[in-house]
Image 1 (cartoon, rainbow, N blue to C red):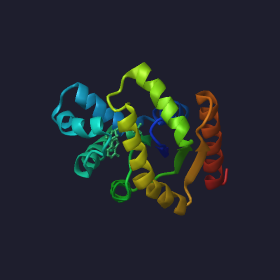
Image 2 (cartoon, helix red, strand yellow):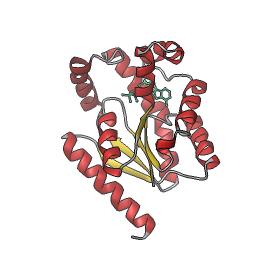
Image 3 (spheres, rainbow, N blue to C red):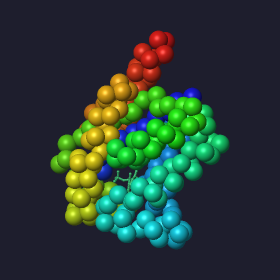
Image 4 (cartoon, rainbow, N blue to C red):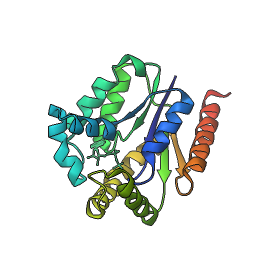
Length: 196
Ligand code: ADP
């Protein structure tokens, strides 16, 4: 029964770490970015509404994002835990998530923040652009996403820090080592909380 959230700047390897952590903790990873991208590639109605925002590096409007997460959190596979990746990204989304979880009588156990210097993030994005060809991995769009991260998502991190559930992890270096660090940090945190 673990409910986790991972937050990290673009290029921090958040999606990759989310998959490894989800596997370790035995919960499904729920990535809003992945859900939007698959809707775009399958040309759904949601995909057509979200595409221009993704391509420009802008946030998809809250009414679309919140509705998507609300629906997803009602699925049976996430009832006994999940790892949210990419949501919430703004203070209003934090409140929305609070309401969704409160209505189910549950709460987040821990929030993982991946930290890495901007220069390393840009370097990684350039590499990912060659490997995966994501439409939002161009220097201009990347800088827009990074700027939005610093402006909006910083507040999200502060809120969870204030609640005492933030676990910050050094996200620079070897991906395998970062996974190990993150797992150790989260397990230690969860153990102190349950008094185990
Ligand atoms: P990254 O963290 O590398 O920017 P994501 O896969 O998390 O990548 O997100 C890709 C894009 O999906 C974002 O730039 C944005 O357009 C959209 N998106 C994902 N999550 C949200 C969210 N919580 N609110 C608004 N837009 C979102």
